[in-house]
Every structure is written in structure tokens, then in C-alpha cells.
Length: 383
Image (cartoon, rainbow, N blue to C red; front, top):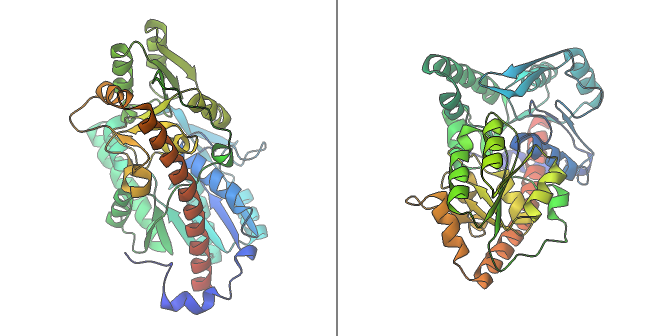
């Protein structure tokens, strides 16, 4: 893997870069805390404030007086999500005033492309994030003709961003391989940060009986909510809590009305997500498509049991994989829940603690990787 983190070219200059004075600007189209990407960069910026001169996120919802109030429209295929068109003049002004050492573009939408164009014009080095497998999502939501057009368009945008970026980051091997396929040359696998509040004790105690589970996230086809509903019907002795919003929210609400052991709490804040996790013994993530699975990492940090599908990117990280249970290829979600419930209480306690320790270590490692990457990019630009 070609890397910026360890290169002879930058090694001498890295010593001259004081990371405490670094200024990094992030421009993301993901609304803060509304999905995994939004949570990722909000949490990262929060942690970076302790380590560098200035870290700032520009995305919809960051400030009360938003950069994107003028124009907004629903995302094709999912009216519960929207794209926001930023006020270019205000973005330009903020970049000029801040004069960042690095600009990070996590999304190829209006915010990301605006930041990309301005940074290129001003000669500011770029870093791109690749967090969403758009080609798989277009196949789920759109017709074959529109899906093909959308996939082609996303590839063009990704190539545009990747060609001009000093490095492209992803949080799983699959995402890195997909980035390479879209033209990325310099790539890095970097983990996912965890919000401070999820890392902090106290942790709710686990019960000797597995009597409650939860799902928290987007209510969408790629998340395999059907498996959650089916498991609830089969395992009537277990309480299923579902939190989130998305195209399947009406179905989730209907299932809660007609299935006694399902509770649907709707969309909740990040602090609300923590409460939902703490009230449950195990988090479920049976997704068909899951680049990483931030919610699983957050549940591990809360010392909960975690059950994920084999397609979840978190399994690509051996230390994290040791702290979760995986749904086997030949079993349903309900069967997997039953299998875990039959394990001894001591074994489940050990798994939860292994997951908590792995999550905390992973968070520290992720922040160190980002800091080293920023220093390397700034050093190369200085040369």
C-alpha cells in the first residue's frame, strides 16, 4: 500500500511541522450526527481540538445560522435525507480567513465539491474520505437505467476528487479497494473515532439473561430491517428496541404497534442513542451493506454485546472483531441471537469487556493516525 505516513521524502520535514499549530478544515455534506459519516467527522473534530491548533467542520447543521439555508432538496430514492447547497461566498470567506494547512473532503456532494474547488484554486492540499459504497446503494434504491447513470456520475466525481488529493482514506479494506478502483493512488486505512461521551463511564451492567436487544441507525433496505422484524416475531421473550429514521420508518412504527415486544422510539440524538444502547444487552447490525459500522463500535465502547453481519467492515479489524459476535453464513439473525444467549454469562461478560477495551484502544490509534497523516500532508506541501 502506497503511504504518506512513512516516506523518505517527508521524513526530514515532518520534524519541522508542529502539529500543535496545524489548522485543518473539513467540508462534509453529511448532517452532523444524522448518519455514520456525520458522526465520524463531528467526533474527529471534537477530539482534534485537544491536539492541533484549529480543527473545524463545515457541514449542514453545524451552526444555527446555516451555510445552506437557501437551497435544499431531497436525496433521490430517500426523501428522509437531503442535499444542501452551501453559500459559496461564505465558504470562500471562511477558508480564506482560516487559511488551513489541509482541507478534508469526506463526501462528493455540494459542500465537498465547493471546498474542493476553492482549495484547489488556493493551492491548499486535499485529503479525501471514502466512506460510502454508492454503487451498491444505487442498485438498491433506483431503477437499472438511473442506477447505471448514478454509478457512472459518482465514479467521475470520485476520480475528480481522488486525482487531486494527497491521500484518500477509508476505514476498511473493501473501501480502500473500491477507492483504488475509482482512481485513488495514495490510500490509507484509518479507523473510526468514538464520541467522548461513549467512552466515558459509568457503564450499565449486563444482565445474566439476554432479555433485550436494540437496533439504532438508518431505517433502510440495506440495513436488513426485515431480519430484525422476523427475529422479534420468533423471539417473543426478548424486547427489541428500534431507533432511527429512514424510508422504512412507517414499517417500523407499524411493527411496533402490532408486535408486543418491539418498541420504536423514532429518531434520537447522539445522547439518546447512548441511552438506547445502555438500556439493551446487545446491539444488532445485520446489514446487507455496511462499510464499517460506527454504531457497533459505539456499542462496544459502552460495554455492550454486539452482533453484526458478515458484510460489516468492522470485522476487517482483528482487534475489534475479537470483541463482537458475527452472524454466520448459514444462520438467520434470530438463530444468531439464540446462539449468543446460550453462551455462559461469564463468557458474554468477557466478550463485552474485550470489546470495550478494543474500542478505546482503536479510538486512540485512529486519532494518532489522523495526526500523523496531517503532518505528512502539510510537510509534503511545504516542500
